[in-house]
Length: 410
Length: 63
Image 1: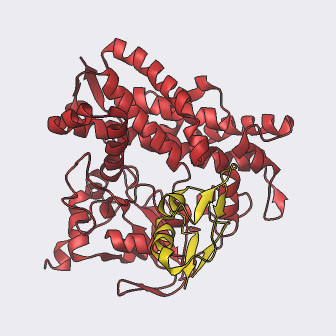
Image 2: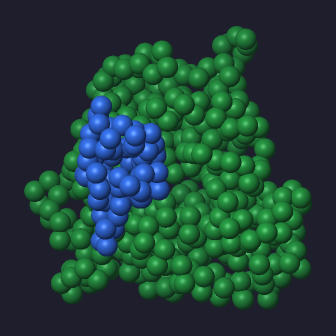
């Protein structure tokens, strides 16, 4: 066993932000609960432990300190052993709330994302994907993340949340900026980009309110009509809830698809196998492995609300838990040869959508988009070459994904 | 054996319906319906699989 002094891990170190996977291997093997004293935190890296913590049904963990700290400056400030109560006015994104407001907001917003509602989007998604490919395949070279997946995922979010379809490219750009990845053409910072998108969504909310919020745009209308903590929500507060969903719904799927298509490209035997059978079904299966292997979200945080014990490790009230989902999805104890991409591996469960109270609210829409993006690309592109030298995976403590994945289609 | 569902957590993802279609269903409004609140011991495995599969941890099985 390596001595503790020879190994160190900090989710905000340049090494971890560029490539955390070698550190995850050591963490899983030797330090499944790795203490980060400066942050009052434990980094949790094994699948079973992360799953057990996310499975809690007793309220032992909260996200009122945020589930995604933006930087180390947010963690060097301690909580004195007591997680703070949720902020309720103005109401922040629901991911930072606690019971009962957290569940209330989710149940108000979820109807357009439920399984059958998501499935009803399939013709729309196929048409959107087809139209994108008509244009992009004509160009010969394009970017899988930016030009293909992100325009589709942003377009679907526009459709579900009432934004005009021609805003999709702007939504994509604002989300990229809000996620801290300026693309060089913009001078805006993340906070300004978030404010612009929330402003766009607040216009939709104001229009729906003026029109009576009769249920035609279910998620938005229900949030408008609700009372939360004994009062109705402002346009900005409703827009902030929708923003959280639009953010998650735009940012992630394109990176998973782009990375996944790159993995198929660099494993020609696997690409041939996917193409050989029922392409629709194989794309569905392959997208699940893409989620496990390529999902860019590295970790989410919880704060313990009580003293507890997980796998023999004592956790004190107020301790922060850095739950390394990207490590859990590569845990040798859960998956065979987990660091290998294998398109048709049997996957009983994975944590790309999280688990428990903050389980991805858009899971069915994400799976729909993912499998159609993969399927239609492979159907329409007889052969393709990825320009890996020009692919970009900007360093990040949170969303470590391919922001650029140039492809040439022949 | 008793099934308990926390309906403030349930978001009708339908995982339980896949695991235990004799115990759970979604209605026309995509709300969860429990078909049998007190299943017999022969359905223990399905019930437990349904509870395990719930991504929202909304189902508990009481012996």
